[in-house]
Length: 343
Ligand SMILES: *Cc1c(COP(=O)(O)O)cnc(C)c1O
Image (cartoon, rainbow, N blue to C red; front, side, top):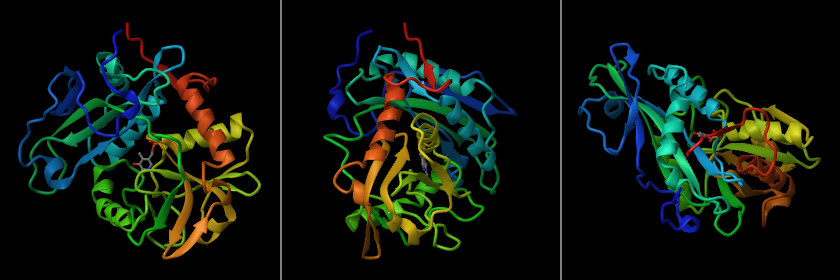
């Protein structure tokens, strides 16, 4: 198959429309079968639930070309399950069994020319989402919904090496106790924009959010979970009901324990113990792991000794193993790689 004529290595993370997207609609108690469309625009009522009360949730995953030329996605079943969890919390009807994966397959196949070739570092980003499309003025769930899945090719996350970033402890909170921090809702991002712009203006790459109740425990950034490495090589990740269960983080913890034989621990991580860790990384679909060299706590700098100038050795091993699994150079645990036949 002929690939699109794009400069894969220099593309950024921005929206570029591709050939086709999947659309299904929910009305009168059920989802229709859904189909591909070339139309990238949505026409809806001005009083739609998504526009008035932000009734929407989303997912993010990628399609890759492996070393042997297959087109694959990574654990899309977990994205399907998490989307339904988000829907339940927002009173959005969940998708019927199989629809999510069917949409992934159809959309990737229709846009196979936009799946970047192996070795470019670029990927095809998939954005599934559901929103209240019907009108509501009284506060209640919308009467109708749309599920959509579009794709956009994105360049390598790290251009010219993964330089550790400096982040700050935020004075803003991301997620309330018993709130919506554990679901992938647009509303969690709308309210983070002020805090991230403010962080950037102060020269920091990201915000480290603390637990809103006590402001003593580490939660996550606006869009990625934390991994920390202790002096004796243990991999630690914060445990909290108000962080988003990252698929990348869950996969890296498995890789650490089962494939690399490292000790792992999911537990509460206190702000005051940050100085005890020697490496820190942010986990998410976009970067897999983005290394953190420093955390600024209101002017006091906490540094991660083994990851200041470049990604630390344990983080690197985790990064290389997981990206190897995704690219087909490392054997994948059963069920992690979903191949999409495109001929
Ligand atoms: C999407 C997201 C992540 C990363 O999850 P992945 O499944 O690894 O992509 C982490 N935190 C938040 C708040 C997110 O929305």
